[in-house]
Amino acid sequence: MSAPADNGVGTGVQAPKRARIAERTLRTDRWWLQPLLTVLGLSAFIVYATVRSFVRTAYWVPDYHYLTPFYSPCLSTSCVEGSSHFGHWFGDLPGWIPLGFVVLPFLLGFRLTCYYYRKAYYRSVWFSPPACAVAEPHAKYTGETRLPLIIQNVHRYFFYVALIVSLVNTYDAITAFHGKTGGFGFGLGNIILLANVILLWAYTLSCHSCRHVTGGRLKHFSKHPVRYWIWTKVSKLNTRHMTLAWTTLGTLVLTDFYVMLVASGAIADLRFVN
Image (cartoon, rainbow, N blue to C red; front, side, top):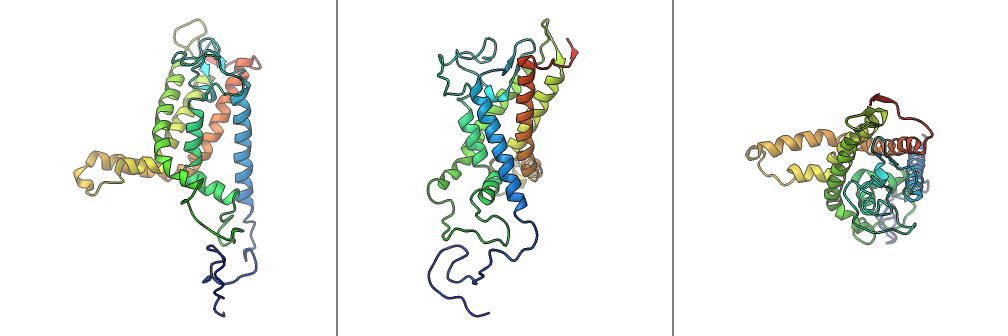
């Protein structure tokens, strides 16, 4: 193969010292299928979550204290009676502001800056690159050194907020063990809420930032046996981060959809106790 021409064009696949291959790829498999499914999956969740966050209906079941995670915490006087577990911090909100506006931007930021999600939408949306051994259409590559991608570096701070939100969701799940006639109650909704919280905790704690916080700066593991033990457990969980990223999108939709059906009266909650 002859040496590539040094024309100084581009910093990616068109870099002067890269071999010139006219074809976009020499792959013969359906490499485009995974990026396509990723776009469809992420788009479906975004559309559903956006609609549900703004409709302001069927998000609270007063009989059993079921609250959808899309509206938690609900801190406005616009929230229906009983759904504000932590009081009213704000007055009535206009319709263009979702009732869960306090945490939704941080949760969105946590997901958008997640290391796995970066890979997912970089490849499927921006084609940077769309797949291994497939040339990206961009002539230049600057990485995460300029706006807006430099914001990805604040992922660790979104992680801290995500921990607080996970605690709030845990409180909501515990509060939901409420019977129709008072006291303790247990139904199918409790199983769904509890499973969603457990998986959200697993996704949050499997985050790369959590792995770094627990043991990333340790120089001598032997001097910090507790942190080392935590780091090893988080590291094992970290190998499931991609699976948990997708699973929790599904459980969030399932939880919200179930609460919506019960709250609207479309179905009755399957009760086991009270």
